[in-house]
Image (tube, rainbow, N blue to C red):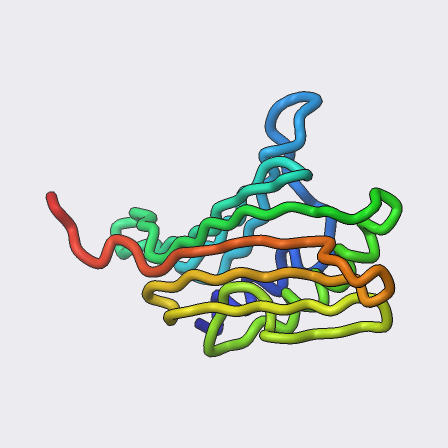
Amino acid sequence: MKFLVAAKKNTWASGAEEEKRFGIKVLGPFVKEYKNCTLRYIDQYVGGEPFQGLEVVTITDQHSIEKPIWAMSYRGTYRGAAKEHLAVNDILHQALKAIPVDAPFRGPQILENKRYFYCNTWNGDVAWFNGSEFIGDKVNTNYVHSAEYWGGLVNKRSFA
């Protein structure tokens, strides 16, 4: 789980904009990647409003074959004013950097700054989970971001 936490902190949550674009004049897909030894994390997402993505962790075996071992899908929407999008992204970056080690899915249960609050609830563990997050505006008392996510371990046994 330490790898997953490091990968998430060093990709979209970092705020860095080194996105690889495939396609012309479309919103995505965007790809963020992190690698450490035999483990690789890939976050691929599309859209802006709404958005959807898939995170995958792979492991490379002694024969240099890369095998997915964990995955998480997510889908969400932004409901705030266009001019506030960067401020909402700021608290989302902060929340995703504060990812809990024992639940490395999205952010912590609660995080606040002067203007916004972030809430995240989940069920399960790294093997099988689902959850939802939202960001609320303290001034206008409305929700400006919400997302659902689900995932867990994959390829625990082979049918070959």
